[in-house]
Every structure is written in structure tokens, then in C-alpha cells.
Image 1 (cartoon, each protein chain N blue to C red):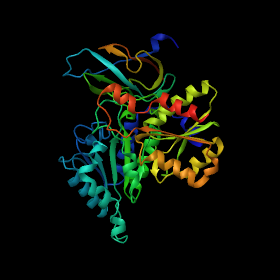
Image 2: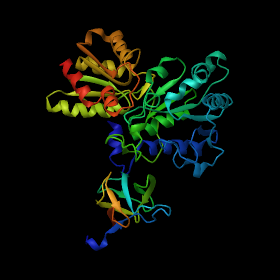
Image 3: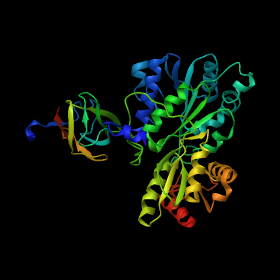
Length: 341
Length: 85
């Protein structure tokens, strides 16, 4: 792939958080309408390092700590965007979306439509997502399906530093609202160690990754594993172990849920015949069902076997062994793949 | 090139307010054998949960990582060796 050829000459590797911050800083230097607001994003640098170092360069006017009212500051971001600014507003935990649901679901997502196209809402809503570190049911969700469900906003989920930077550039430049969901476990924070995969070579110059372009993180002929975020890395682990058993898995990283790259998924399933969808969101009414249905719509005959691997429909437990039980791991993915063979 | 030409990578400025003389390496930003410019971030360490970047002391190649990710080290320890360009 062209991307990989380019990567070989890059000496440095970045964590996902540093790649995100680099893209934000570049956009802020290039366009004074770009600013960042959220809880603990200024002095603290974001509790998951999403804004680390930005305050030093851009000051409090453009890196703004806000009062603890998601409705107030997300509403302010929608208004600023409609007036031509390019706000990035952060939900410290995606789980907190509920207190600002009207601003997200009815204002940010629909104001372009409701105004008959008189305003656009070029904002980015960043949100930390995901569990695996015992933060209990109100701080561990991904809620991918909840955000991808409503029309009017794009939804992106990076799994590597390279993807995080390109998707962030694209998100800030997009004239419509983009929800940018970053998994805490992938950021590369000292107290929350990332798996090996997300730290990648990242070019110094800016580049964009178009939305709706899924990425084959591994090619294979026997089964298609479709996933996103943290579970890209768990799927790659599973694929490695499956290879020892003679099963060659293809891993499709969605990178964006809206728009969804159905073509890449269908093409892969038509090659392998078997589909395993892996999601860290709840099983019912979510990503796994949507992907399976999309493939069935397009190419029902290609499907020999289908498996869904997702969180069971329960609140995510605080207890470490219980959380490990409900969040899919590489072994769960491996077992699901074996059931398709 | 002889060993004597190699430059040790250490935490140049230990945080003033740290009680501990130990730290942990969190992230390396280049791999062994790759090169980096002086003053760029070489790795990230934590001392008492505070993160700081260790900058490349010279322009050159990272020839040997002594303390890998998640390894603990003491104040003054050599984290890696660089060969100046």
C-alpha cells in the first residue's frame, strides 16, 4: 500500500494522543477560527492527554476550560460553529452525552437541515470512549451505535496514531459536525498502557484520511473480521494466533461509522465467505447488527457464516474479572472465528 | 565507532518537587537504529505520575535502548545510548 511505503522513511513514532494533538495544533496555527473547549483541557491537558501542551502555545482564549455543564458549552460550540468558527468541543467521557443530548442530537446534528441550509455546523465533538480499566458502568462505554444512529453527524474512531492524525485533520476541515471518538486505552498514557499497535510512525507534515475509507489492517482469505478502535488490536492478536492454526483472517478497521465503507466490507466477505463483527458497544441495536445487515442487503449469497462479538446487554461492571468477562478479548474473537470455519 | 563516542541519554532535569529518585519509561518515540535531531522528544518518562519528555541530547542515531517501555530506572541512570551524526 502506498501509505506503508511512505511510512518506511519516517523515523519517529507517536502515541495516538500526540498524533491527535499535532493535528489540532497545525489546524490552529493555520486557521484562527479553530479553538478547543472542554473540561480540564487547558491546565490539565485533557485527562486522557487529548490537549497536552496546547495551552502553552495557544493560551486560554483558544484552549478553554469550561464549567461542568455539557449543555452550556456544547450549545456554545454549536452557536460558534454556525457563526463561522471551527470549535472542537470535548466530552470528557462519552458517557456524559446524556446531559447534553438535545444539543448533540437536535441542534448540532440537525441545524443545517432545519435552517434549510442557511447555516452549517463545522464543529468537532471529541469524546473519550471505552473501558478495560475498571471505571464502572458510567465511565466505560463506547456508545458507538448511539452516535452513529442519528442522521446529520459523521462519526470517526481511530485505532492508530497514523489514522488519528489524518482523521483529525479531516474532521476539523469538514464543514459538517464530526464526532471524533478516541479510545482511552489507545492514547499511550502512562497509567493506562496501550497495546503495542496504536503507536505508529507519523509523518511531520499534515495529511487527511477521507471518511468512509475502511482500512485493511491485515489481509487474509478465510474470514473477515470487521471492527474498530481498541478491538482492531485485539482482532490482530486473534488473527496472529489463528494463523498458527492455519486460519487466515482479514481484519477490516472501519475508521468511520458514518459514512460507512460498505464496499470494502462486502468485497472482503465476498472473498472470504465468513463474517465476524467485533464491537465494544452493546450487542443489541448496534454496530454488529448494522454491519451484518448491510452485508446481507448487498450480498446475502456471499455469507456462509456470521458471528457477532460484542458486549452483552448489561451495564459494564466495575469488578475487574467481571469487566474482563463482558468486554471481548482476543480469545473471544478467536473462538468466534473458529465457529465460522 | 568506538564506545567512547556514544552519548548517554539521561533525564537531564529531575523534577524539583519529586520526592522519589525513581521513574518509569512510558514511551519511546523512535526505535533502535533510527535517527533523530537534537532537542526532539526521544522518550517519555514518569516520575511520581508526572510525565516528562526526554529530549535527544545530540543529533544522531539511537543505537541502544537500555530501559525499555515500562522499565523502572533511578535518577542519573542511562536510559539509552546515542551515536552523534
